[in-house]
Image 1 (cartoon, rainbow, N blue to C red):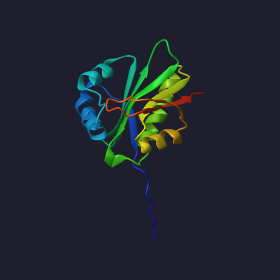
Image 2: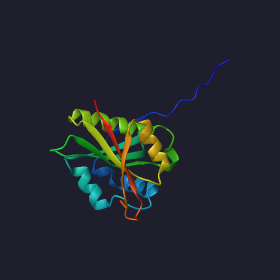
Image 3: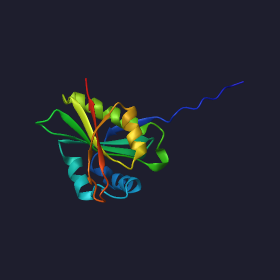
Length: 157
């Protein structure tokens, strides 16, 4: 008798460029109700040497995206945006993208990883905590709708 095992689908995280603009905007719209990255800002980030835009793919389908910002005079890498398609949540995509951010930050000699998250996004907060990020402070009325943000931080070795 053959025993079947279930495994999570393989996720590939890789840099994306301008040819993914429409798919990235579609994912942004599916994931966020406000504070979305505009098409113009996204195109600027996709071309910027100080931004790393990563897509997470299940097969050929874009199921996640992340923008990480690097400043030449800073040892802090900032996750500016992280989105996972609603139908692909729970597959480890967010965790894989955060690991990729850490890897890229270390390669650029960054010592810390930072991000902000909506106070009313408990799933993302749990993800960041599971990935070893620590809540450091609250930013009052940070988002355009007045929602507070939590700042998360992780020291990189």
